[in-house]
Length: 92
Length: 444
Image (cartoon, rainbow over all chains, first blue to last red):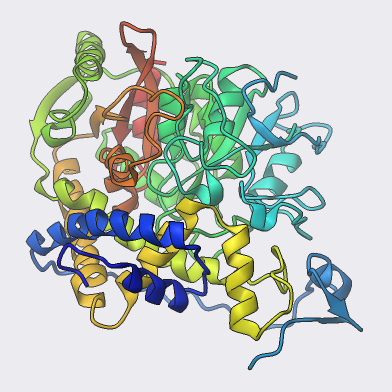
């Protein structure tokens, strides 16, 4: 899929993995653009392998109980709720 | 308040404390920074009605310092853009160059400052999104060292790259605003108390100024315009490809600094040639993960409940996201998918480490590095949206700084023959904010 040509089925496959529906016009447009962009990204092949050992610091804090949002605030932006819960579509 | 250039998404005042260092200031806030009770849209239909139940740490610090927030500023959707034309709430126009883009993605923030409708503003910089619009609008912008400013309450796009930064008419005002928002935050584990690092950086620069233990950051004091003896490295690779008039303006400004006692030498940074592609691979990969939270169930636009979870989810994201956001989510998913991770993502991380090494080396022999902020003057509105790759290439000079997690400032360097603003960027060592502020204050 990476050798220049990106066909519309490739775009549909990635869109499916990303959970984004696309219309046919978008699929066509992205297929053309992705070819250019991905072949540009391929110039990263010229980058030498580089040592990247970062100094790591432990940033974990003690696990302690703190104030949090109350239920009403946490649900305020949900499009649908029921009896204090988020309401979502069925899972399968 | 003037809005004919579409600088604000929401004009709703948030009053600050009665007194404090910013008591007389109005500070506009980019619309991807959470404000309790005031909608925060990220320039997206997905979040058109989202009202955060809490304040970002920087918003708390602003209001505690006495600032009044006059509204939330327009931006490229989720911070993804270089022109502020991809907002679901319409494009912003550049008040300093009518008919042209204000730069992106913090275009609304730079525009309201340039127009004088706010004293200062906050933007966010993932690959140049504070510096680009500040340069295009003829104002000052600072991208802080990664970890200096808390990102708690910033709607995440690419966590490992982005920082909140100030935009203001002068270097001193931008530095004052940075003082207020800087400092560790227990709610953001990537922040650190940088005062010790700042002192070390001062010592490297031969600055004898005494810093008291536990004192404030004192960035504004560094805006003294004194560049006598300062050593400036110029990465030739960031100058050569730029527009002719931009290059001319850049050298004029450097000559001005030389006349004030600074010296400059050319430096070679071979890694920066790959910075843009490394930046986009990393940013898109992080975006594909971060934006997975917008499912239309907890918040965001709902796709309705027809079909199963995946179908409903995919439908809400089709409706809620604009083209650039979809493009980046898809490309990021692709770069992280089985079989391509080594080819793109791992290589981009190598490039990132290489860029860091290159900058560290160059900054061991210079106090700051200087380049044009943008390789081009502001584009005309609508001119460049059709070709995403060309748009990405406009970020060549700003993205290396985010990959290396370093601080940078853009200051107005002059204008082209058509009165289009040109910005000059200074890059400093980690927590070298005072050095870049000092250098910038000699010009603005």
